Length: 567
Image 1 (cartoon, helix red, strand yellow):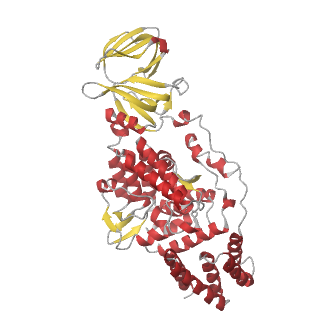
Image 2 (cartoon, one colour):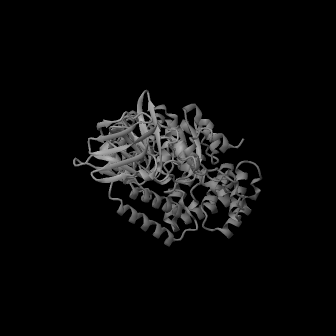
Image 3 (tube, rainbow, N blue to C red):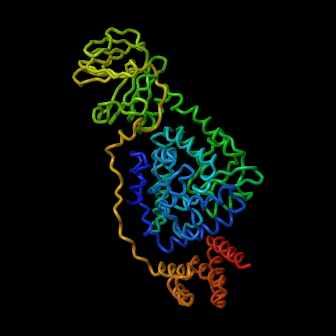
């Protein structure tokens, strides 16, 4: 049985459309060299600077230094910690990302950054997702925080404009990481993101909680502000920011929930300040405190307004436990500004405590749904099947019709199906008998509003899962073959006698490549061979660093690590 089919047994059905195949055979020798360089640097640098769980957590969660991890191996290693791993394709919607984590699944982007972006990439990649996120999950309290955050974050409501910012951010990260992108391509993607950000004037609860996630799970520090340790995945996976973040150039602020959620971030640039938490328990308290102000806890008219502003699938829950899931587009308010009627547009489903009600799915309510909110003050008719009702709400809303069906729970009605139904409010007809049957929701108030569907497995059942067909393995370039040859020499699979020939070919085809030269120098120094070749390559590396300032620190750090290994 394939890895994907094994994983899908643990993935909620509605999340399966986000999974991808790792396609391990598509990683090139250059990709493997990028992984190895970053991991060697990080393991050495973070040995004394990261949270105590980092070093042991690497091996415990299936992270190796010498090669890119296989996600199925990570999945098995994470199991003792109550977690698993699943491959995804780049950035996915925040609700889906948090739902994976709520279910104890670490979503891992399968791509790896290019050599040109080895120090930092705004696009999610396997270095960030695997080597950054997984190790600290070996700490029980931190793992509990991430899972708690997932359960709460998955319910956060965004705005239409913020969803557009997400899409623009996704496009920019893809363009920046694509080696075929031109400077003009990047400029246009950056401009689009700036325009979308400028249009997003409302800060939703999804944005606020994403800031909390960013400044903790992604870019968090822990301990003392004067000597903090790193635990954030964005820092643990970025050579550049991991080393830069502890310098005096980055402000260290004591973690504070209100300051944290008020501080925006830019995913495409290094961060100017970071927050230092006392311990992981403080983070659990913070996300629980924040959740108290979210619509899934407060409900009401304000929550319904957030659902409408999201322009996406959301769920409204009544005090009876009945839930309406769909895209909310309209509500009618009374003189006090309180919602007395709500409407959805497009596929809508009704559920009770997370389980879709019989015959109340999106096929029945394909074009939308309307429902009253408030207290019934005049009730003519019992509401039993076969009876005729004429009910009046405190708001002035009136419903008449004949009851053809009734759904109840513990003898309390949840829903009445009416024929010959008329719904009116202050002279306006909200439902006409000619429109068919009307399903009347029974409920006095809205107690919860949250993102997504109440029964997502049923609501999204018709959405296609991703195609996971095998793709042909790409052919290697000459440079890839040189990287592979050096790798095999280092692993003892072939003789070192080929090194001078490899170095000459590298000079001919790619005089600007620094990473392979560093690997050749490493072998020469480790084995004490080809001293003249090693001296020449070292000189070439020093010259490359002088000619290109962006390479200087990468080369210097690489050579410094070699010197330590041979001291």
